[in-house]
Length: 473
Image (tube, rainbow, N blue to C red; front, side, top):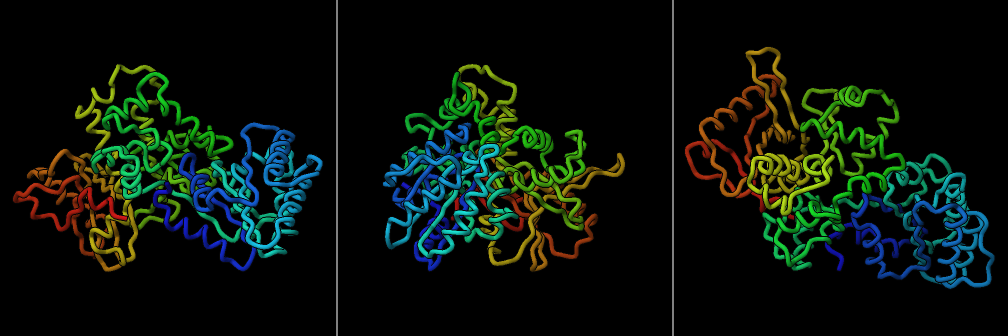
């Protein structure tokens, strides 16, 4: 059963109503559900469907392509010697099908582009010289190697430049979609369980598919990561290898960003990795952002060159905290650390990241969904020993002359503001106002699991957002 993806479903189904041939790139990170989405929307009915094979040679790829042509119904043909011949055979097959839309689905497209295969030029020729001359072709290409899809299809500056008629980026599930998924799987998770699972797995459906309803939430996490041969223990390497042709460069940058909670500027990244990669670094940062691993943001008053890149991928940060360089764990490791300092420190930071991934839901809860806003984090580093620094992890700068300073706290019950914490909130607001010289009204917002306990300091908070608000569609 297809969960969520309403917008993507509408986009794909609209292709069948088009009065021209359509060329569509569907892309997104490994295991996000791209292939499943396409197959379900079109009910597994394609004029032609082929999936590339990882690590196969050009001749092996052509052989399996010929097998797919046979399965689709093409008969009496010689196996193609190159991709130009292969696409000519595909055109012949499609021509024989008569009237009506013909959906062609080429999955794992990057794997077909083996060295010296001239695959892309043959695809260009097929589309430009044949498919665009018709009105009945829907060509959908897909692949987990997002960097290849972006470079060779989405931002192709050769024969496919501006030839894409649609591009669909399949994002990870939101909390709302994960809740629907958990209910469909009858996992028996409450919203706190779903939140904590999201803090680890993010919104990747494939990871959620490993969860078992006969286990508690904590038992599931132990089962997925901390037992011998756990399904997701080695997923980190597979994830980056599948997305990027040369994953080591991406992992070095991700690893550097993982050491600094609020993120790094470009110059700080260069210093951390020990080299200036120039345009290559720009490309890597862009692709990591497009895959939702990092978020770039600019602080108030800062130039574009001061853009900060922050690692926000839940799974990657969980890996760095609990799995990197570790192979052996005591039995029931996750159960043993629940509510311990290591868990509490991690969960607080992980909750903040989930909030950053659900800013639209936060804006909706505040009643400002229709207001244009910029979203930042902000840091003030003290200039001398007499000053204290300030860090604000979520700041919503609104066009209606209001700035929301958001504080995020994950707790077992209602969060209680103490006198000292109230003083710290006031100090943060004062320093922010002084150092930015803003003339906008400032409102401190608390985003918590279950709201604030009523006391004299809770009354100083202008607005509250609770965990349930983050589950809005």
